[in-house]
Image (cartoon, rainbow, N blue to C red):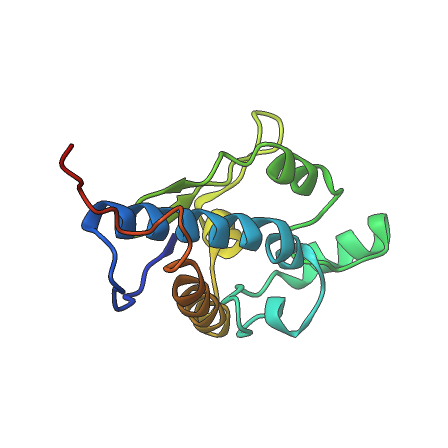
Length: 157
């Protein structure tokens, strides 16, 4: 399960509007992550190498050799490609609160996703977390003055 959590100072918003704005930002951030970054977990790049940014564990030499011979690649978490298709197709919707957002990946009954694979796929690097925190801070400042989240004044009739 992916978690995203950090603190942002609140503008002149009511508690309810602040909560709604943060929930929207958390949801959008994790949706953006699942669309743009999650597929990179299945590519062969420096982040997915053992000891890289995504904390992938080393695969055995026998497994890597068999994969290269049969499928002509050594991409992590991809043998035939069916698990990748299953994960991208079976992503649960992002759940978000004002405090955090979560997203769970899962395989299918034919293409199981082991716990260690789930941790590798769902891992969010420190650099990505910092980028998302920076984006959320600037978006919060921009949207705080949007009429959708503006503090409403009570008028007596």
